[in-house]
Image (cartoon, rainbow, N blue to C red; front, side, top):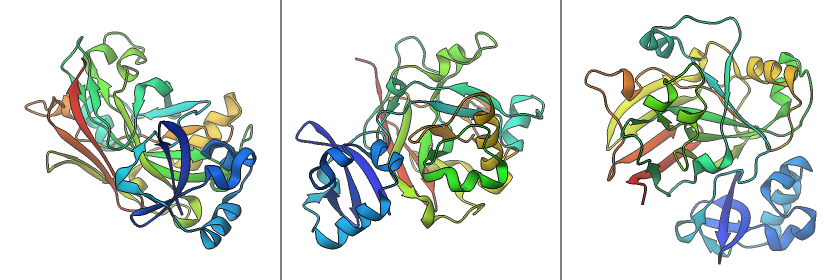
Length: 283
């Protein structure tokens, strides 16, 4: 199933997508699961599916203002340098363990919202990635058990302000400018995507394909990422792992390509859907 978070008359809500229609789950599940993160934590996917059988959708997807899939994640972990072609284009070396950095919730926007180019830089780059949403939490999760800890998957644009990212050896500022990362449009539940299924991910900027790869080319697999992160800190339901970008980023092209106002950037994942964001300058 596909699950979204959205605003319903300015009130945060969440629901189940069926074609062009949306079943608002908030009034149905009420205090039992007031948001998508709680539904995930309580493993109420079967309850949501039953609600879809007994209730008709009352909302149209196209008329909703979406929120980032998980608006209130406890933790957002991002994996850097996780595709060989991206490692090569940066001139770096493959590491034995994953490169980890963090994003903050306020650095994200939803599908259909504009990514904001900050006043401090015009080097706003795209990065097509797949987001993994944790379902069952845990500490020191074994790789062979990791697939069972995944609630679902979404598209992610790890928008990066490159000059701020590379100003020091720490990437945090360039990866966390306000409203520079896209997360959406929905979460596809893990029962719809087989473990280790190769997913194709692309960046399409103004109709031009700039990144194109598949997840089987990851250096550190999704189970490896879950096992590694959960070694140093427990993972909790609703946590997000952004799994890395392939080669073709704008900063390493000749000539360089950066996102600018008026652009439309799409992150396309064959098994999930399309995350679409316009670009605008910060007001």
